[in-house]
Image (cartoon, rainbow over all chains, first blue to last red; front, side, top):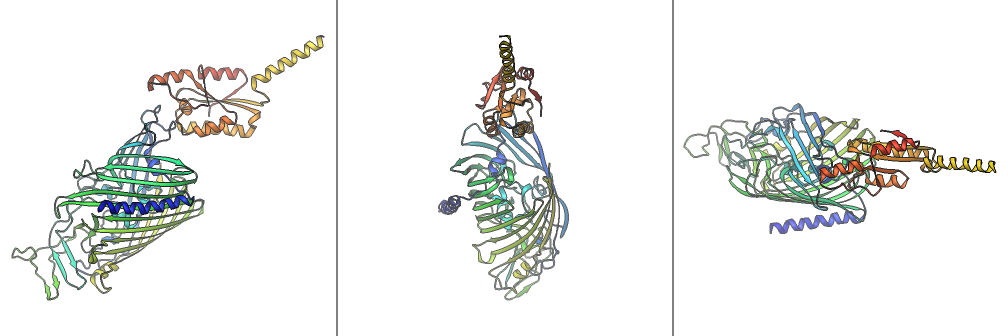
Length: 480
Length: 141
């Protein structure tokens, strides 16, 4: 049944891609080739490269406006990855790498290495929860078999354009809600159910007390996996067709597999190239992809759960205009943020529990005969949750050095549980200024909104979501 | 009779000189590529293209001689093979050093496959010296 659903979605997406091809429109960069191969006969033995991206982000710092954590810092108004302030100057990314062909006479073998030293989700919990530098890419590609290149190691897995593209040519600073929530995987040992505070639509509040923060056990996946990928690109009747099939650990940047289950990645794109080359090649591309895997939790909510992701989209780039659309659907292992939208680790002491029959200021939820001591906010994962989202982007280069961008994205989280459903809508206004071909400044202003369809606007849940601030981001990025 | 013989001899010398530098060519240029740097590979092709554009295809002889690490420019699987084909159709000659082919063959275990436009010559550096003796100017981009 599960596979049948994925097949239906894939078929529907394939129809869209075929339609895009049929109308003779063309696409943009081919990330499978740009990241996985080198130019034959013209690649160096070792090309040193990298990029640095300092940034500034700010919100109004509005506190949680209601509920059990009323008055505490709201996680969505704190600046990641440290979550200890509503404005922050940060070196978001600082990566260095080497790529090339190990033996210049043989173009059939190339390699790609990249390490991250910036302060972000990759490095924040890099080593068993503590901060540190992290290798993001280390792969070898064998090009000996025509039509079936083989890439082995740790690298970006084939998926949607926003995640698969090189981040140093990303038009914005923050990812869309759907890509951040569904594709930038956080790795946990439990589901966070040890601590929970819930308010039902009727107004009753239930809670469970625990000291367990359910902190991430490692850095975010950075859209990467350790595995083996077969891929290539063919040009047929003026359309460039690309495919990738991959088996991976499904454990992000972590060493080894979290369990014995492997993820299966499928990807296909069709593109007609208008001109140019590299990351900013002009054209129109349609693509579909799917990921099917499982995750194993060992503490709270222990068990093995399906994790499925699929999507489709298109990109367009020609002359001064660029645009993209992307849709993602997800089942299982949905990251649902923190308790009461507060910052994980926050302790609010004893939690009074209210209900239809009044408020109990000294609850004994664990039933040991003594009042409970405290509630500590934890991270949460909905193991059987479902979600989806879409994003649409348009950019216009008003001069060769200045580009204006606008992006609208909607992330619908927990669509299969009425009380838990949250819809995050963000419209991002952006401007980019190129100081030279390798250095550009990006300014983003995100108009952010969140709602819980099952709750009245006067409910605590709605009030908490109303606390969501707009966000200003300024980033400078230089590639060397 | 002496005048006729003299005219024939003068015509012979003129024909000989013309043949050395190519028919109707005003310039003859040999480009050396012996560097593995990909940017140098692109640059030598750009220079050849610019020479053709400036003088005109029929008024200049251009020969690119590849030897040492620069022979990668003429590998059959080459990102620049499209440009090589295009330049060849514009009259640019490509010479590949046999000594380098032999040396690379030892490392690879087989002789490297070259683009069809490449003509093997005895030794790249000797080819350059011979061309210079015929009036070619050497440029090393």
